[in-house]
Image (cartoon, rainbow, N blue to C red; front, side, top):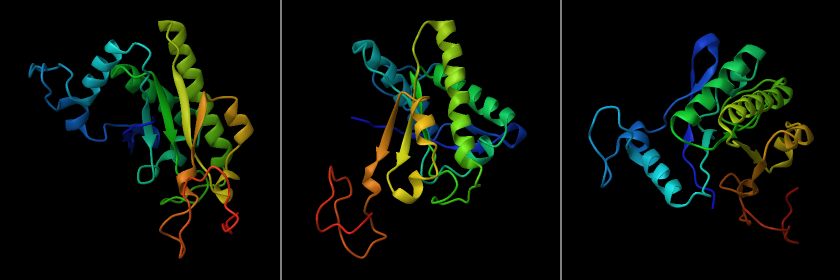
Length: 206
């Protein structure tokens, strides 16, 4: 099952957004049995994931960057070649520093539809941002011999899907996590299945 903690973006060098810890205490400092209080020693949930991976070598963990409330700086991060490169290197550095195996991008949403305003150019720039991440991950794979995953959380709503270059993105990422739980929600006056496998005859949505 897919479980993740999303990591926010903060404004950094050249107004590019950089990932930071979402909850530094839980992520890297919380004490678990067997941990040490020595300075500079990784604790927290990140260390627990490393131990779990040692026990189950086929387990892969990914950082998830963004989310509904933390997507405000994606448009700036994707806007230029320089900002995309800075962002990609920062994400991959973060991934390697804490022992993860890939990156999940959760931009909600390019162009429009989220809490923050976007740009029309986001549609093409998102693809370029993902390609920059793929290029950086491939470079690290060459250096380490390990395969790193790149995934995205993608909208299911028809109005938002049109703001993605879906065919191009599919050739860049390892897989797409479709947010089908957004088919219905609290914004509507009637109820409906929010992650249906097929459309109900009584469902009047697109």
